[in-house]
Amino acid sequence: MGSATKGWSLACAPCYNKRVMAIPNVKRYRISNADGTQVATIMAVLPKDADVTAYLSDASKRFDWKAYGDAQAKQFKVRVGQQKQKKAK
Image (cartoon, rainbow, N blue to C red):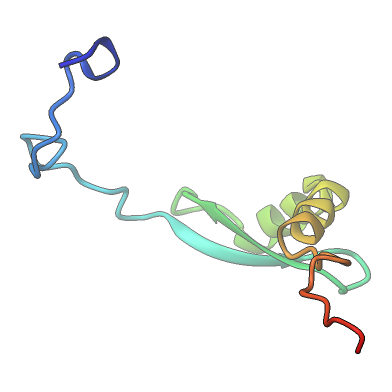
């Protein structure tokens, strides 16, 4: 084994030898910005007596909509000039 793989096993075995549990009470909420043009999904664990609508309105105000829009535009960016060009005869 090289130094890059020291301590790591490449066998097809699970990463954990114990059972790993996910957070069972995490919920997904969809929030929208003030003008309603963008929608984002957030995941949160709220206490039982929490006011969900107040939390979601506060989260929508604190959410960085500009960075989210930039990330979405970068992810789904249409590249111009990368298409295969046909030869003119």
